[in-house]
Image 1 (cartoon, helix red, strand yellow):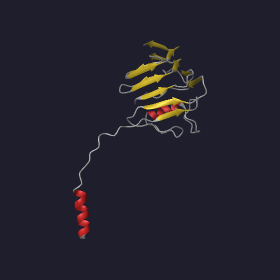
Image 2 (cartoon, rainbow, N blue to C red):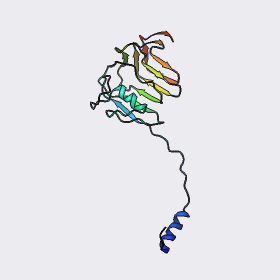
Image 3 (cartoon, rainbow, N blue to C red):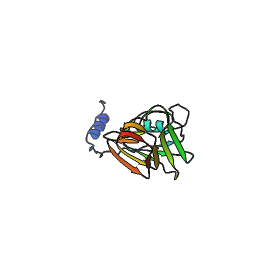
Image 4 (cartoon, rainbow, N blue to C red):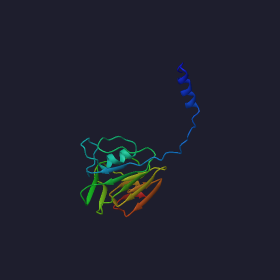
Length: 168
């Protein structure tokens, strides 16, 4: 507190101000642009699909912009087309809502090539995932070789083919 009359007056003015409560502030989603079809997480200035998916789930790869917590991030592609992303290992489980959008007008394939047997995508219980314009192929798993969905999955203009599973 200030000991001057002016200081006390100023404090009384602050205390007497009405409190304005703001409604909840919406979380804006990030748009993460993939500009390389390799499957790595090497810091090389190129944003790969794996890095973009990681960042949409809370990771921090410097090659891609950060995703948002609680927002429905969008992963979009700016790659030479048609293109294939040849996976070298299992992708992270999708635990947060995300849109994976191929709006290039050309075929874009995400496929397992090396790294053992694994499915292409797994969607967890609390996630809402939209996959648009992708071909998902060559996944191998005991159940659901292409996409194992426990959440909400929207497939638009996509093809799931050439996957293998004992169940599902």
